[in-house]
Image 1 (tube, rainbow, N blue to C red):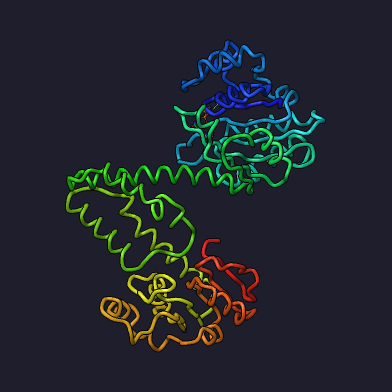
Image 2: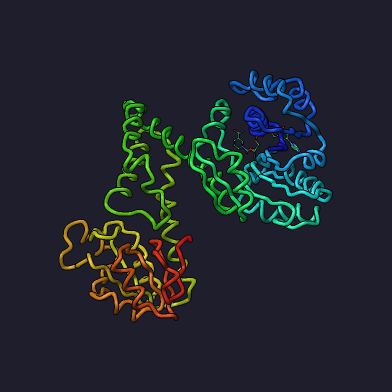
Length: 438
Ligand SMILES: NC(=O)c1ccc[n+]([C@@H]2O[C@H](COP(=O)([O-])OP(=O)(O)OC[C@H]3O[C@@H](n4cnc5c(N)ncnc54)[C@H](O)[C@@H]3O)[C@@H](O)[C@H]2O)c1
């Protein structure tokens, strides 16, 4: 393919070298003429393992040219990778000035181009940037519409500095954010040979995936380091601990606990987190990330409460009370905390949970419910049908087929359903379904 690359920093320069190595004709564009000079001379503008030899080879191949002329680069290529920097502004927001300026130039270049062109944004961009900011600029400047003369799409870049050529050849996956088939087809031609999964999603989801991956990496590093600081204070070998933690591929290094849903609770996670934090306090170890986990969990509970209160309805039916479907353990159940709030606000509450039989509750489980919602007994119903029938808004915290079948059968058109469990086929329910965060 004939490819133009805009921005020849770490991402752009490595992409230029690898694409030229793979036989494509590549035009490199940057506003920094020093970088262009280096590439023209077969030298690398970035320090990266393998780049010195690779740049010398591809420069000698004749497949690499460089220019500052945006219009010519677009006219002479069929596809553009946009890799300019998107650094932090002083207030923490993303400084998009470089990519916005470039989008104007790219749009102007399309004015005079008769053949189709694909713009692939590869810079990290806050969700919505391509569709709400960059595409309108290109459309305005070119006088053409996305899909008619050109296409835009977003492809997050996952390479890491220091191992960028290796990462280019073996990425964790390829993600294409596109709203038409053309971009995905073209990019499959370009990157489909790589030994990884190839996923196509919406442009906004692809933009978000990049942030989510980086945030997750930052979170993992901080988790390991907070663990290490506590281990140090306790005289425990942090490497032994984290090595073992990583050996659990079932619950730890796995998709477990990584699905959006409702808040955590139960008899273990909150109490063990609190004990960890107390232990750290006694050793003067600061764990700001772990220290904020329970607070964040509470925000999630309040988010659910807020949605019900905002509905303005006063007859609330809760489907589920224990901390997890299939158990009668009420200790630190976030659903109990919700019930407590609803009662406190004077809402008319009814509750159904097939596993919870108050007469059978014992010990700490019993104490917890008596402390938080002492009169819950009078609010509980044996039949889901009656809770649904007598409520205007339903809060669904049970995640099982029987519940979903009952909802499908009994929910009325005038009811609101707050979905805490990602109900399958919720579109088929008669009521108005609100997802907790979806
Ligand atoms: N560095 C990484 O490891 C990495 C990994 C994944 C994603 N990213 C993302 O990729 C993007 C680029 O990162 P980078 O580290 O390569 O940036 P960089 O700062 O090293 O390079 C950006 C380049 O863009 C050039 N530029 C600025 N305005 C331009 C314009 N109008 N026309 C042409 N070129 C222009 C600059 O001169 C510079 O050479 C960023 O959004 C970054 O967040 C970076």
